[in-house]
Image 1: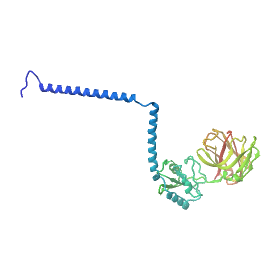
Image 2 (image 1 turned 30 degrees about the vertical axis):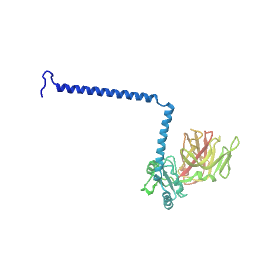
Image 3 (image 1 turned 90 degrees about the horizontal axis):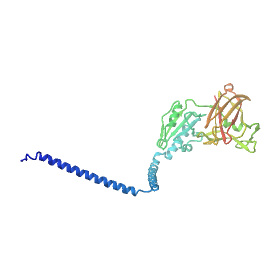
Image 4 (image 1 turned 120 degrees about the vertical axis):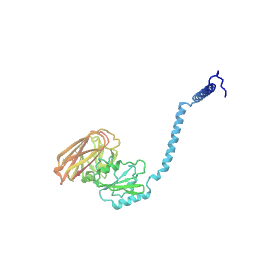
Length: 343
């Protein structure tokens, strides 16, 4: 091959020219695509839906996705819940092994079907907090768990483990898991005073209250009457067995138990019924008299199920007349009160 010396490096110059043409072609193609994309974007923007139609479209998409998720969830739910035979097995287990002082807890809390499966002598408890709530008379708790059910967690199990003396292995019953917890320090009340209301005397101010089939009816100054009865009311996020007394009676209400077994302590709770209650932040004063003598008083403030404790060690081991006087600043609603004498 002969190269003209006057032309220099002819092949190198040819390659550089080709590269320049390719670069110009690439730039031109990129510019054309950019202009085409911009034109398409301007066209789409010009044809965009109104704000209301866009919101409606987005809502329809979200609704369709939620429906699809709901269908999938409902389709898989039967496989995550216990069968009727599992509940029947739970009832048979409790019927065979439950003892006086036993109670049932459930996790998650909505599994109320355990109430139907459990024998009538074994109550199902649902306190607002298993960690620090009083469990009078309960020695063992049967925790019925639905580990695959929606809402299941280990909060109840952790709280019971902290209060247990000897936790036992879980018993699998199909879709259920049952664990028995023996409480380390069970509360053994000598008397739960709401259960003794039928044998008590009730006065509102200085006026006696008439006994009726449900409890007592106390005359009010402005006319009418207020009821005092043993019932269950919702207070502080949980049902509470208690004596319901009128909160807006305008005078002290005194409940006297003629012969109550006394222990080292009188422990109780009080709170305005309802979630939320009609009146909030009401002050409550509870005074105790034993055989007609002042034995202590306590003032409670705030919302929810408030606890109190009064020392009765001087009367421990004896039967005494015990009177509780209750006053509150609340002008409406009902006050839920319980108390128990402890060993």
